[in-house]
Structures are given as C-alpha cells and as structure tokens.
Length: 437
Image (cartoon, rainbow, N blue to C red; front, side):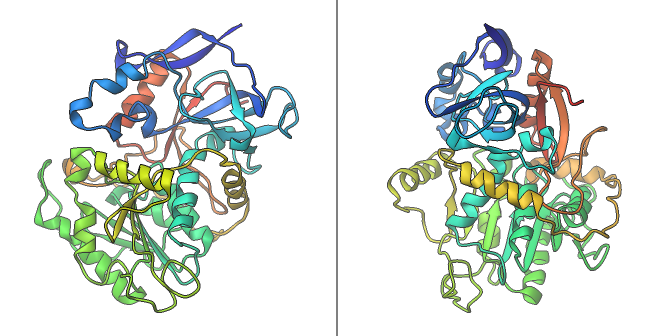
C-alpha cells in the first residue's frame, strides 16, 4: 500500500515534492513502525543532507545523489505495532538515519533511535526536538560542559539549535548562559528561554534577567546590508564586559558559522578568540573550566556546527577514528545519530523537570527594528518573528519554539525548504501529517 512522503526532486521547486505513491515501509528486525503525527524540519534537510559538506565545484552532485530519496530526520507519532519494547499506540519521538524520510505518514525507525515522547510536550514540539536536542547534548558532553560553575555562550540563540542549547545549558545548571541574537529576539532569549543575558548582534544592546535593558551602544541605524562595519565590534565589547564581571566562557557553541558566505562574513570565531578574556584558555585551570573536576579546560572549546569542507573532513576523522586533528581553540561538531535513544531519554527528562522561574513576565511583542533587516546579511542569527499561531515555550523544562506548522503537501514542504534557505526562522518549522485534535 503506497503512502504520502516528501522526496527530493531536483526538477521541482525548492528541490522537493510530495510523492503519493511512496512505498509503505516494513519494519526490519530491531525497528518499530510509527504513524507520524509531526516531523521537524532542519537546515540539513534543505541542504540535501550533505550539500554543505562538499566544495563549491561539487555543487551539482548533491541534487543528483539524493534524487528520489526520502526527506527528513525528526518525528513524533504513535507506535503502529508493538515492537522493540514499545506498545502499540504509545506516543514516541525519534530521529531516523539519513534518507529514512520522516516527512511521511508511516516510518520504520530503529528502536535504538526512538524514545517515549515527553509527556509535557505536544506532538508538534516533540517532533522538532530530536536532532537539535541531541546535537546539544552530544556536543556539550564531548566538550566537558557539565553545568555548575561554568559559563556557556550560544551564538544564534533564537535559531533552531541555538534556542534549545540555551535551555539545555540552563537546565544543566550553568552559572551563566549568554545568547547572541538579533535585537528583536532579546526578550525571547532572556524571558522565555532562560538566558542569563543576551547581546544583540545588530546593536550591541545587552538584556539581562536583572534588568529590562542595558544600552551598551546605539550606532546601528542605517547600517549597510553587506559587509561588516565597525559597529559589529559592539558585540565583542558587550561580551567582554559581561565576562569581566562573571568570568570567561568555558564553551562557545556557535550555531551560526557555516560554509555560507553570509555566515562567514560575521567571522565570529576570529573576533571572539582574538579578544582576551572572552573564551577561557586551556592554561586557565581555576577549577571552573570545562573538561572535568580537575578544572582543566577543553582545548577545543569554541565549537561550531557548520563550516567548510576541510572542517567536515576533520570532523569525520574524529567521528570515525576518534582522532582530533582540529587546531587548538576551535572545532566543528558532527552529530552521531546511531544509538541515540539514551540522548532522547535525557531530553525527555530535561523537558519534564522544571527550572525556569514561574513568575517571569509574558513575552512582549518583538520590537520593530528596520536596521536589523539591513544588517541581516552580514550578521549571525537571522531569526524573524513568530507567525500567528506559532507556539512559544512556557516556564519549566525544555520546550521548543514552534515558528510555523505546515501540511504534508507540495506547497507545505516547499515553504519549509524556503524558510530553511532564507535562514530567518525563530525556533523550528514543523510538517504536520496528522492534524492536532
């Protein structure tokens, strides 16, 4: 019996379409059939899984290599038939292997990549959490971020991975969790996601839990759309001022830097690593550094989740051989989806456990900022406003921000890919297969 599923099609608009005759999966040994309710959309989907990992001269290859293959990693739904320790009808969420195709009515997922859905989350929220959440947990584990006594900086704090990273850092008990985001998303990061402070990349303004706003600088109006200007250093100055009071960051988690020229233009790694006092150095063993109880600092504590081809080659060497060939100071992290069920279970626990204060004021509407749009092409986090009907997290455990919900149709999946290519979504985009009751 055929089913509806999104597949890559290089001849279609946005390179994707919904096939209505896609084969219904059959569960192999160790797999579980799941009726999908919602599927999360990730930038890697729109990048054709590995399109961002190849040199520019290979640009023609990914679209041909993925032609006809199923789209999507993240999903949430109900178990179709008892298997792998799961009962029929149980609500679950998980992450499929590459080309497993979560944008579908039914999927067959390895039981080792599946877990029971967090009870406090909707299907929409749970369906968009796995890849981003697992990325955060694996990266933090590898680089010694344990929580108490440590400071975390998240660049791109309102984006799909970044807004989860802020909440994970806060739930781990980090002493300081700081975001870099657009001015219009300062309130989201501080009031909703629990950041200790947030710095606007487009104005240098800092917002903290203790104060509604602390103006650090104002020279953002009328900035050019392309290229960097002197005002961009306001971010470095604002972060340096925070570190003077609270100490340097034990881990910088950069969700912005990538192979894209618009992201490279921001040059966050060089700007932050060249300024003393912002990122803790390996020689600074004061008992509070990332890496362990002895206080040693991870020598690769500036972590990106995107980059050029050579960065991905080095990440692959570490992933496959366990050999770290990155230069001291920075590293590109590559997620390992296989056997990720323990990470999903940890995420479920972090979703359930309350942490953020319950008396925080409701999020105010993002302020209008015309200058921000002009600076977007040369800046980091390119998030926009939450569309009407989008969901935002309340106080408590981890809760993804759902920016937009789209149907499993040609128009829906193409809109989702367009949003990923546009890089201006706050939180996550979801494909809804079964409408919420």
